[in-house]
Image (cartoon, rainbow, N blue to C red; front, side, top):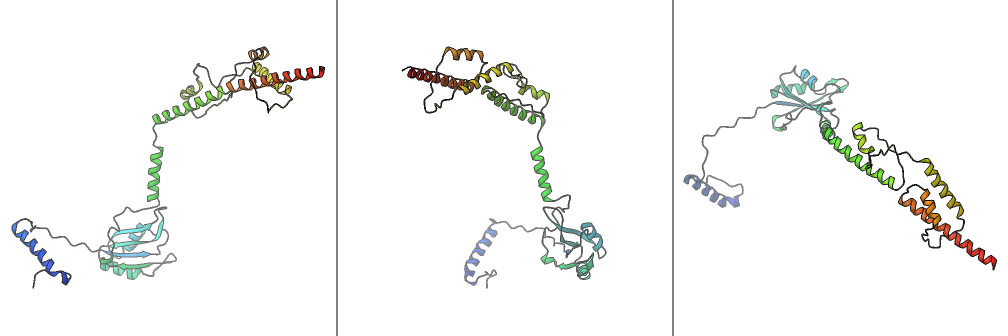
Length: 295
């Protein structure tokens, strides 16, 4: 009978052949076998009990102090919520000796405490889960969600003054360009940011001409003339000429009127051209009507 036996009877010959090859390599020195190895230490056995229906306020320190009357308590863990850090109502107590843990579980099982019936069950060493007490003990002040929240707050709010200054300059530059575009279109808009320093304010207030965007006062006289002329042109046109094409007609009258007006934007000039075209077409129609009456 061979020294080595395979787990399956059908594979015995193949298994014995492989074992023979390994032994031959060991004898030839191809495979080295460590002879002087240190024997592994046996795991220390501890007593562990499960404690359920833990009342409010009866946590790690209280459990250790209370179960310490039975014997030496090495570890205590109260299971807590990862979102709030509050107790889930159950935990584990570890004793130095399994016999002490067994006595404590039998004594405290179904024990009435603060209107709650404790559940204490002994867990033998073979069924104990490894790494039960290696994690950091959570509390209402220290739990996973709060730790991740702190990291996110630190990551999002960790901005230097230099970076704030650069971002503010970019924002004010964009705002300045928008104000200049509005000014070109004839929209005079005053905007005064209140949350910036005096050093930053000059970036927005200064124009290319060196003038202040916020202190550009509108000439009331020129604006009044422009509004009067606009209203006059609108009231004089009473005939619907939408179907007819509009042509820009320059006359001496238009030139005189435009000379009296302040410098206007492209959109305002376009409107005046259309109004002048309406007036010219109206004059032509009046002349034709008068000729027809004479006939």
